[in-house]
Image (tube, rainbow over all chains, first blue to last red; front, side):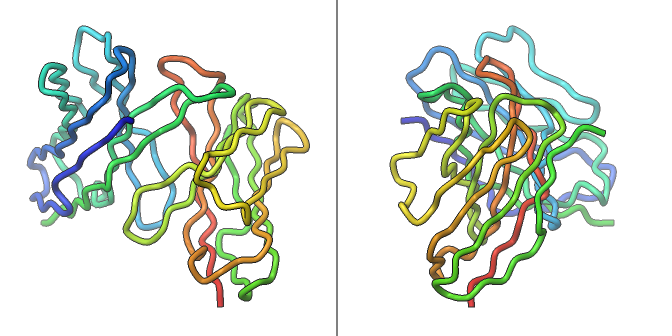
Length: 117
Length: 114
């Protein structure tokens, strides 16, 4: 069974600073995908970034980058130049294929990020 | 803009009174998912549709059912809500299975059971 671990229940960062949110995973499947989602207090899940297990380079999307260390089974999210609007819950998730088609996302327990002035 | 829409955003129902949550999408995606997210917890997949094919997670209670009358719409029916079913219900869509296909989430429906 796949497992995602996020060990930081809460994080604080000052505006304009960079912050790293940790994520480790466990799977026996050689092919997998890792996602980061942001969930503001309004509830919607916003896709941030994706890393495939065979991708040679770390994924980047604007201020978001993924520090993918395959041997360590970690996929940490780095947010550069934090903004007040980045305050939210952040979930790391792993994709697995499921019976009947589609992809199942297994989520970690999340990290609540608070950006301070 | 193409999107995933959930109605209502907030739903209050009484213990044991059937309730239906609605999801629609303009993305024309093959797959639609329903997740349950209890307070301070991660979302948990209940079931999904691949086109018209329904796929239930093994640990989803029988109290939860779903319908997908067409590509655009998907409904979550809770036959006899209990207090433990109070949660945020998230609908998501994706293209057919593949390595990358991200899931697009709706804003969620927050269900309260009184």
